[in-house]
Length: 205
Image 1 (cartoon, helix red, strand yellow):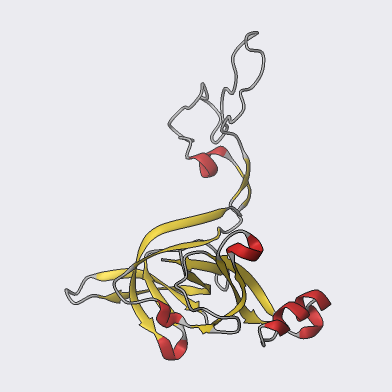
Image 2: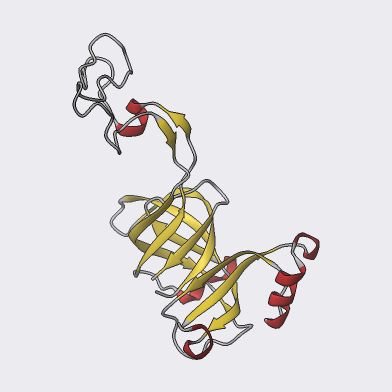
C-alpha cells in the first residue's frame, strides 16, 4: 500500500452539497522525500522509504546525516517504509499530497492519546454506579470479583482490570478523502484519526 507521512493538524467540520455537516480531520501530508528504495536484489523485498519533517543537522547522528545526504536532502524527523509504490520512484524524488485524490478511501495509522492509569469504568466500560458488575454492589467504580475459588486459584490472563490506557498504535480504515489542498499540503479526511495535535500519522491507500 503506497502512502505518505503526515502530521495531524486538528479537527473541524464541513458541509457537503446536501447541506449535511460532516466531521473531518485536517492532516498536513508531505511533502515527503524518497530517502531509500528497497529492491529484491539487495534487500529481499521491494519498498520505498520516505522522510518527512526537517530537523537540524546537530540533532541527527553522523550515520543518519550520511543516509539523507545520499538522497540529497536534509535530516528528517520521521522515516517510514511503504510497499506498493508504482515503478519509477527514484532516490531523492519528492512525493506530495497530490498522490491522493478526492473521493478515494485511505487508512490512517498513528499512536493514540495516552490517558495514563485508568480504572475499569473508563478503560473497559464497566457499569459503575447503579449497575453492579462482577459481584460489585456497594462501591461506585470498583471492578468487583476477578477470580474463582480454590480452583483455579488464580486470575486468568487477559482479565479486564485497571491499568495504563492509550498510547497504542491504532489504524482507522476506509476514511474518505473529502478535500486535497496542494498549495498548503493539506488532506481533509472524514472522521477522526488517532493521536494528539501535531502527532505523526501515516496515510495509506
